[in-house]
Amino acid sequence: MNMDRFTVAVIGGGHAGLALLNKLVEADFVNILGVADMNPEAPGMLLAKEHGVATTTDMQDLLKDSQQLDILIDVTGVKAVRDSLRQHMQDTGNYHTIIMHERISALVLSLFNGEMVATKASDNFY
Image (tube, rainbow, N blue to C red):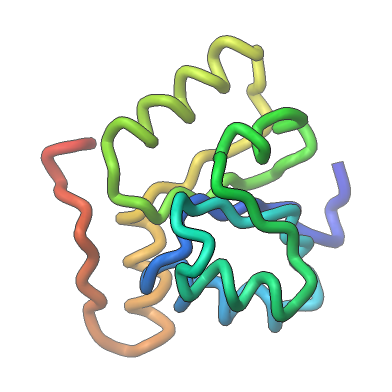
């Protein structure tokens, strides 16, 4: 584990993913392993490509060696994605990687912006 850098991957390249990725690509202390979105033309996917970050339309590609991830950021707001990520971590015995879901991302972005940022995620999922 490298204590000088955070190693992250982002699942979801829509507007919430884009706003967060804008901050992540600027941070010298963040290593982004990849971004996944079903839409290869999603704004976050395009931004990732501009910065030489690996992109994929299959989130499973980011999970192949998930032990190297410090934080897996899920900004999809989709319960099935969240459940799948949790199940993967359990199935692989990965107790290192933290899954950061969309509500935490919304909090971080709200703090950056100085006002509440709305997301499509529902509190009913948590």
